[in-house]
Amino acid sequence: MTEPNDLVSAALRARFATALGEGGRQSRWLAAFADVPREHFVPQFYRQDGQGRWCEVSEGDPGYLEAVYSDTALTTQLDAEGVPTSSSSEPGLMLAMLDALDAEPGHRLFELGLGTGYNAALASSLLGSDNVVSVDVDPILVRRARRNLERGRYRPRVYAGDGAEGRSDSAPYDRIIATAALRRIPPALLAQARPGAVVVAPVGFGVARLVVSGRGEATGRFLPVPAYFVQRRGPAKPPDFAGLETQSGSATSVRVPDILDRLKFPLSLALPGYCSCSWRDDAGEVTGVGLWTEDGSTATLHASGRARQIGPRRLWDAVEELVAAFPEGVAPAREDFGLTVTPEGQRVWYGEANGRSWAL
Image (cartoon, rainbow, N blue to C red; front, top):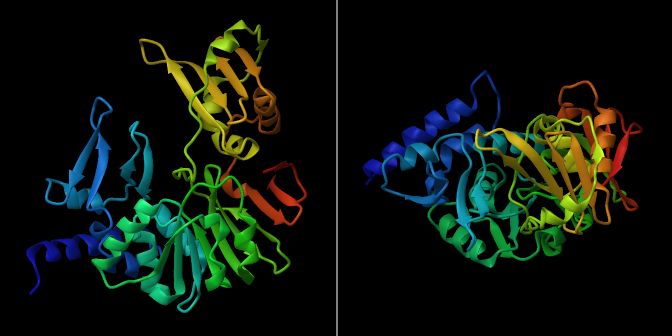
């Protein structure tokens, strides 16, 4: 017998899939979004109230299903300090990444980052459960995902472990997707890919789509979509900026909005894994920006136009180089960037493969 909640869910899923396909978008994955109940994978999630406090929302709570079937990322796990460590990604972004795979029924897919299991279930809907292999570094998430998957009819093969190492006993793979932020493409994944395989992975604050050449090499461009995924490892904690105050610094013409907005994507490629924060005055105006990397390098920019930097890597020098490369006052388009991987290293480029580039 069909329960009333099942009927409500089915109706919401159908409307949800239709909304994802608005504008005449043609995608075979829309049927998967209409078929797989997202609530199986987010029986509860967290959202912040007006004071920034995290509140749990569970099945049966008012507005729960409506939130589940919105084009919104849902935070599903917090650490002891209240920092999100796992989420169910924005469905529109998931659809863009799945479309970019150009996958066909029967293709074997490896997924780095199982998370809630929702993406693996969507992939199983098209490719078949036996063709989907997913690995997550967090064994607690893997146990939860298995329970989530047991609520439906899809049974992809899921494992706890380091997804960057792939899963050689199920290789070779026709398609590879990552659902956790990467600083570079893990070489083990390319070694387990068939010639011609497609790799779709978040790198920096974008998503790269690469084609494997068959010689341990791959190249491609970034998709025209922003992406802010949970890091595979916890981000470095903010440093003590007090030491910078003893530095005289240097005058700079770089503006705070350049760092926070216009150059955010290329900066994530030029400084892989960088973290940032900002300071505001009582009126809410941004008065400064801080940048740091886990090697102890730190830089700050004050709205007054003074920049300071310390540490083994000169972060502010990298910022100045980007401003010189993109001085036109607008954000460079993500799809104008590409990524080339060889056994010798990985290189992000702008415009053409032989153009301006940065080593990852």
